[in-house]
Image (cartoon, rainbow, N blue to C red; front, side, top):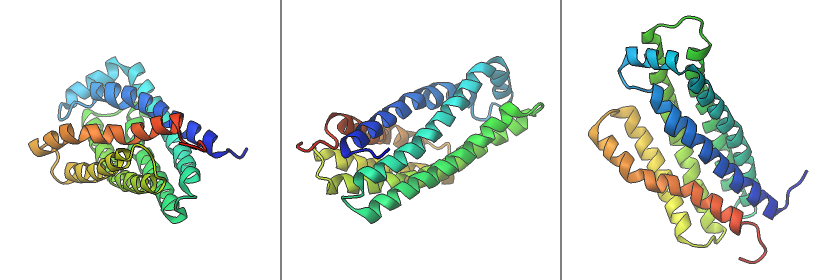
Length: 219
């Protein structure tokens, strides 16, 4: 079924909102319950004690993967008239990020599916999850930068929204690169606190705009 501009905007906006809500649970709440840094024994104990929460976290990740694919296609459809090549590249980058994120999630799923796994293997898999995910987030950040440019070309209102999205994309790239090169340092923690706001507002602001005004003939 072919969607018109307004329906595409609404579906994209609500998909982004749904993704954000699922991420609050899986990434914001559940993951920190198990991701205890170098506390190998504690991680092992937490997973055994909260296996249902761990499973729901993985299900949440799977939902995010599906929504990411949907959003990649819908954003391309919405912005392709503004700039075909940039919208196509942005969509491809988001799909590449989604594939990398799926690989990262595999390392967490392997822990749950294994009949026996050592504490050291659990710690190793968590480290691999973060390393692979951060590599993916660099690509995601470039996607967000392109998204900001597409928003500017679309003459979106308020104009500050595309600036925030541009900053959000750059923040993803810089922060993820630092986490790969100098993880667990004070500067990374400080930047995480500073940049978390624009990183959060970027796509959420786009989602709200799409739901309220996106695709309307007059706005």
